[in-house]
Image (cartoon, rainbow, N blue to C red; front, side):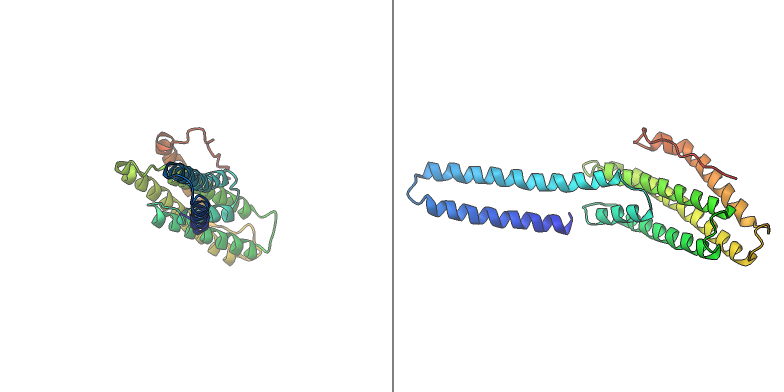
Length: 231
């Protein structure tokens, strides 16, 4: 539960207690049945308000997940889930670290390329970005759909998250090798870059092998397949 949600619930509870005490004093001359009925109404109203706060908090996390466009958006979404009661904290933190690593690597590549907008390496960099973000969407989907009332499915979800995080790590490692290579070729854009082909092949290979199992395991079957545009 988020800290803001806890504060809101405590605030409502305080108001409810003060309201109950005030009504009790005002009804000092009322019968016991009247007092009991009023107190019961206060309890019901209090429960309804608390439920509304909790539902609103949960709905905001889900709705935010539909508006994610870049690494910063996903980092915010994952950090929000770290404040929730989720058993996947370890894997969410790993996803955040991977996104932060992706941002640093993208920044480093653009610095090496001196913000060149027509470099062929930027196309591959964009492919890496799209690939990692698509995987983060899958991670977030799994975190959201897990039902803690079905603990027997926990290991299945963990295996899925570990697989995706492992593929992200592999692609990020190849991406780093590519950046090192690009930093060594200087202004010669035609120089050989073996890691470019290696990264391209890694993206294609991982995408192809994973698609066979992801589509069968991914509950969100309406999610469109991401098309990798490889050179």
